[in-house]
Image (cartoon, rainbow, N blue to C red; front, side, top):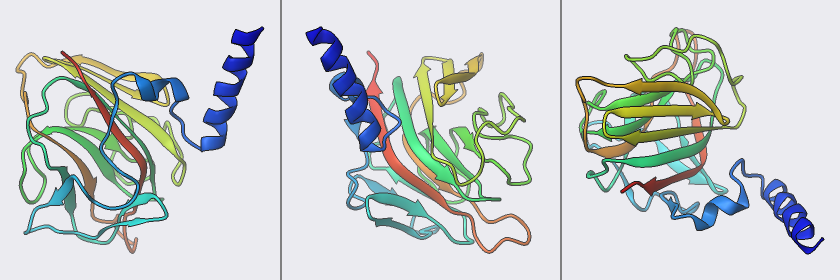
Length: 205
């Protein structure tokens, strides 16, 4: 009975927290990359600074100009990397990994974030490698996206559902930064807005 009560309490606390991650996940080697207060641990390229702000615990990238927010560290290789995010209607973003620091669209893998932007590759795609055309998450809706990368094997999950299980025979990208993309808006839209509550990683040995 005691174990049952603890289980119920854990579930209740997870629901009250407003996070899609369970309470149990926090004690298994996860490192928080976003502190909920400011951009500590992150940087933009001077040629593409964009507009990145933190308001009420939410990291937000918005505007009309392409920009990427990079992790300070650029030596990530094998990891479980996940975010809790929301994309605006006709917005476009990406969860980059093993990415090189640079302006424009940097070299690296991208787990796509797109609900209604006019690009056939939707949230859950491994951009340029595995295409998901179904809209798994409506615009303006919080969701989790996870990337598990070990060697040339890449898995992507959206809200716990596996969308990609891919082995890159060319092992195209082996090491680099994490980055969040601020894409330009769709034609006829004022801006694209990406919002994030959590960014965290568990490095794999």
